[in-house]
Image (cartoon, rainbow, N blue to C red; front, side, top):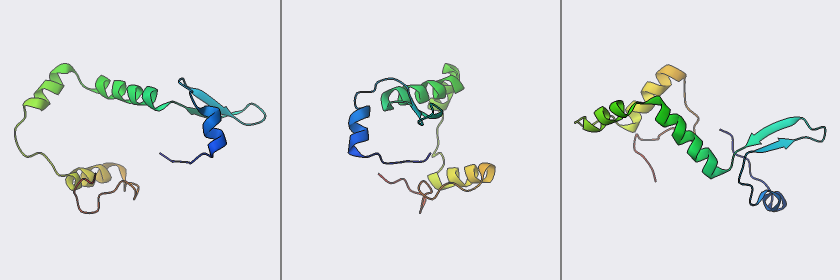
Length: 97
């Protein structure tokens, strides 16, 4: 995902937007669709929940053992998808807060 910072006037114009917003150029061509953070978060959780049944989630909760480190997970993901963006790549395999 790419992050762009908007100026204060644009923030004021968008303030209070609680539904999906289309950003268009002067000709009316849609350039982007923006989803407010609460709606986006809800949409992402709904997508994630749809991937797993209640039974699969419960089986995962019952597993015992140490699991895998972030570095191990990232190596596996990179082996399947290529290198991750440097902003999210772990430096030492530990999570940072």
